[in-house]
Length: 350
Image 1: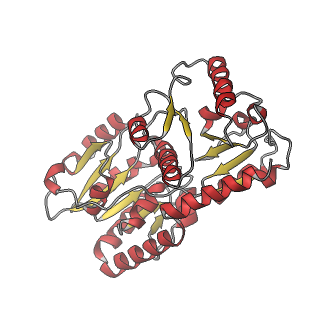
Image 2: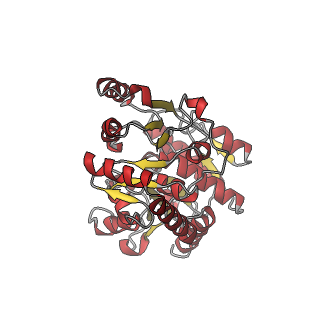
């Protein structure tokens, strides 16, 4: 895993690695030395290799990966995201015998960096279908592409925690709290949510995350006169406590292939309001397990938030529906079982 950010894809990848480790799957994890969860993986007892990715030189990385693969002779190679796939040598599947080389997608990507892979996995069925329809990708071992593409959902790694005391984020006890858990990025549609705060005077907004749009969002809040009710909380490791203290979890994204935040809300019985990006549109059913509004539709977003805040029957119904959907197919155990099944299928196909 060559990425070293704090985004949802990095979080999920690390959670799956830890889950597979707990399930008894032996792994050697190739990470950048600055990866934020490196210590957590080391403390869990995983074998870690950081030398390969410390130099931003593609030929160096591929040469070192070749040496490592020949040394370890792994049953399979799993490339988490594009940078990892680009670090693999062209003949990775044939070093020291044939083996699967799996490329994972957390969003809609160009498949060209994955030409060294024999199998692909997307985090949603829709992403997998897009892969199957792409004429530019063929498995590295020349098998039929449609037989080598799978999907495996993400899962929530939030653990139940006592609600965060309101005073820690300077919030009145009687305020209604809206929560976002995301990067501060244009794709996340946070500008629309900040504008909605003008029409929700009883609400405070907690924004847990950071990113390139932070200064612009802070300036927008000042210009629109809602700074006093918005808390820019930065990256947090206490998502369970934040969710427990919130009245609604909001996912106003313009672009969201899946959105693990959906599962965070469902699993913690937090009402969910989302915009109709691809991921939420596939899983959120208005009035059943959440509320879905058109992207960047300010009146619709305000209306959905107001409905959930004011209607306890609606709140209870979407919380119950979300929890049922989560328990049906998105628990960590269900997702780890799915990954093990994919591994078994890949191993039997080469």
